[in-house]
Length: 464
Image 1 (cartoon, rainbow, N blue to C red):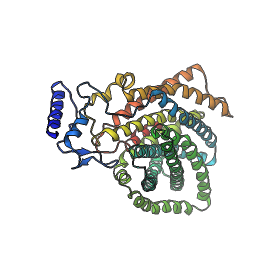
Image 2 (image 1 turned 90 degrees about the horizontal axis):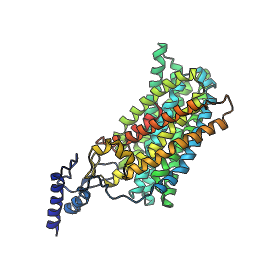
Image 3 (image 1 turned 180 degrees about the horizontal axis):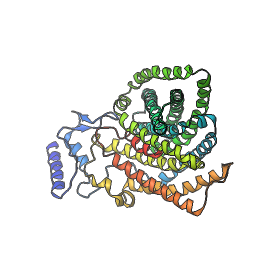
Image 4 (image 1 turned 135 degrees about the vertical axis):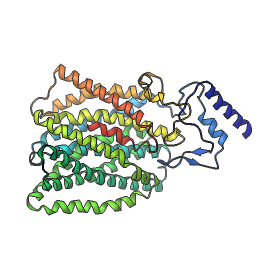
């Protein structure tokens, strides 16, 4: 029976090759099964090679047939995404109103470098929480959070991982912000540097801890009520994220500013305390193999994202000098596209973890051309194209609703709402979102690292 199966499989592969099928990945001679989440697939002597090859060659003759997926209609996706998307948008509207108000506080007027940190911290929060939501969603969808012991291990390790990443990258972000501030001035204020570092470390660590707890609760509830966590976790991660981050930054930054004026050593103690806690968090993160892999390999995309976000903060600082009301729209114009694109990327990540034979490898029958074809990405009947259309449909109505809320809740000068401004604003939003969806697909072609890790690169473009 096994010999007949092997012959049939060999014939299937040869037939696909004769018909001009090109695939950058080929099923290896050794039997492969999906390894632990985030790790490279590894040989398993208990898996029959013939049946494994037979599975991966399905659909070769007919072109792009996706490997088996759970059936999820466009309507179901729309309604599962809609509510958390609106809640997230309301949170971003409030974040814009808060940013517009706190820009007049002493923290922002006396230490204008804080404006450079705002996009960097919001982007870092987004990177960490979106990737945490995606990792936990993938873990839940692949059966690695089914028991109490699994849940405890995964949660503790991932929360600790987020803390290590938040502390490490925030230190770099603070230093980069001071470099950007030094460029036009030609000098560095070391008192401001310690103030920014203490404020950003406290903000990133505390916000990440609070939001991580919310993410864990959301994903466990979603699994309990048979809702796909990929569709709701990432928007909910953003619903309170920007608002929470801005409130913590403004509050603790103001406290540290007063300490800087009287007891400057307090900021140094805060920095030292976070540095001392970092190794402890790292040890806790290594309890789970998946978190350990991300801890070892996930720094490049998150640092790149931080640099891009800090560059966006430098632009924001200059723009705020001429256009004060830009603070109202900054979290919304950046957040809407990033949240929806993160939903799409999270779904892609789960799909690859379920159907790919290894990280950096494509399912059999797929080619690189599939990822670069714009018409296929938006107008085909493939599952990811249907998802893209549903998410794209939410962009314009979402922005119109959120801009109306800005006008409703803002108490200062009326924000711009002319036809010219609205048309340019919506055009920019559509272009931004399409770029993010295409980037999400292309990022998954990068080899060697976990798909969830590279969500950070995608989300980093949000705040530039």
